Image 1 (cartoon, rainbow, N blue to C red):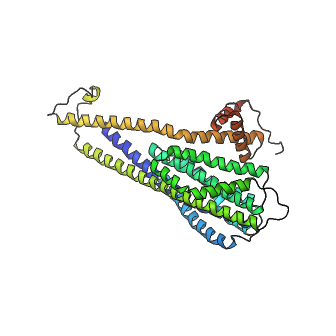
Image 2: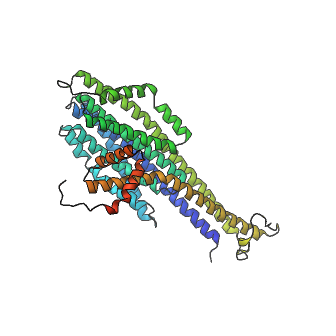
Image 3: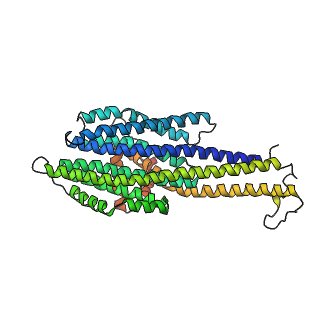
Length: 428
């Protein structure tokens, strides 16, 4: 019959397996971050290329596309490795949802060559190109979200939550770069465009706020350093110019072309600086996974050595002892070992409970996102709205009612059973 120590060893081995999986997933998250960064840059170039009717960034697009393709292959290899290892494991853990996200994003990667061909042929409007890249990046970030949601260690989960929100905020900054570059290149904007621009700014701030809540002091210091005063001042100035543009009497002149270039360069400096923060988060994540795995392996070796010296004892005679007052007879070596095993079991139980409690706190941010996504889906189904329109409606309702976005989403979901089923035959 196996002792409690055997199962303590088994529990520690399961923890090591989970940490190994988290380490591999964290490596993939870092690769996805690099690919997203490259795609964001390609998107910005593509928008300016389209808005200028092929006059600008024609030469720079090909090297950028080549960089994206190399990173894409690295990410695909990471996907393949995860799938191979999952088939070899007895327990899939969070792999089902993670792999569903990967299955969704792979067709987007497959469709990139056709998208690039249409951009090169000037067959798309800048807004269409932005939407296409944004959809792909959203799919890649959804993989990162599932990695964060599936983390079972609270410290690792905290870092993944910080990284996901930072990457999401950086994506909104990339969308703003592409959107602003096209708007300034055209030399005009309307009310809808101004609202969209303000929405992108607000979305960045919301994501970066969550990022700061879950980041270490060292990372926050690096973040503050990356937001250079001169760059931010120029960014704010160009934002005011872009959001107050009126339709010109004639076609855009060199002034607007230069403004567009200045905007693109300013945003690029800011986003490239964000990359240093993203790299630091990825490095911290790898180091944390390695440190926790090494500690778990050390503990496992200690347990296994103890198992080799533990002889059959008195059927757990010490189980009901008062650990705070019961003395152990110094001559009873077997009783010392039994006490040692019980202490380790209690320590393991307390540690796992503390981890569970902290994990629930960390996941609150992820759960809020799930609630908002479900509410958006409800609006899309019953109001026949696009995803962006549904999000804007939720945000506007929250502003009007002076409530948090997640509170409005929860109220809407609570009323879901009272809403009529949408008529599939109704015109969209």
